[in-house]
Structure formats: structure tokens, C-alpha cells
Image (tube, rainbow, N blue to C red; front, side, top):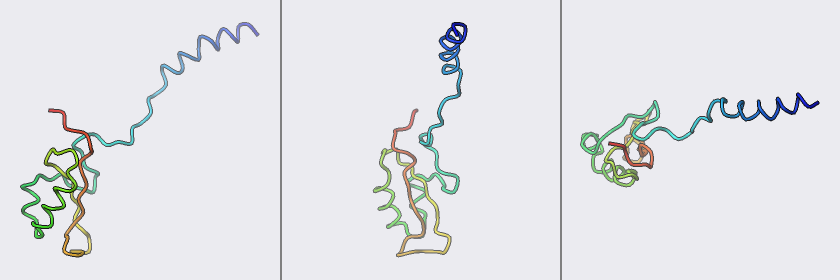
Length: 95
């Protein structure tokens, strides 16, 4: 019984220290999901719905880095918009 306790006391911390880390669900800063494209304000101004797109850009750019992720709608425009914008994560970029 005693050797088992010694092994448990010594092996358990070692197992915890060498186990792989938990994966983070948060995407890295400045990265878009695979089906989105990273766009700057200048890129967005070239879209067919530039006025609406720039308004969406300003509303979505939560971290203020002037970059957002864009995915065009597959079936064409919807209510005057040609695609969907999301921020490229909420943390500021590391420069």
C-alpha cells in the first residue's frame, strides 16, 4: 500500500505538468475564419455597396485596428448588403 501512495504522490504532479494544454477557442488576433477574407477600410470602399459596407465596417471594427473579416453572401445581395462583416477579434494587434 505504501509504495502505491508514494507513486501516486510523485507521479500525479508529473502527469499534470506534462499533459498537453487546453486548446483555446479564441482565434488569434488579426485572423479571420477560413470562409472570410481580411479587409481594410480601403478594400471595403471598393465593394459594390460601398456606403453601406463602410457603415458596417465602422460598426464592426471593435478593436479599432481598421481591419475586419468579410464574407460575400452566396445568393447575392440581401437588403442592399452584399456580404457579412465580423471583427478580426476584439484584442488589439501586436505590432
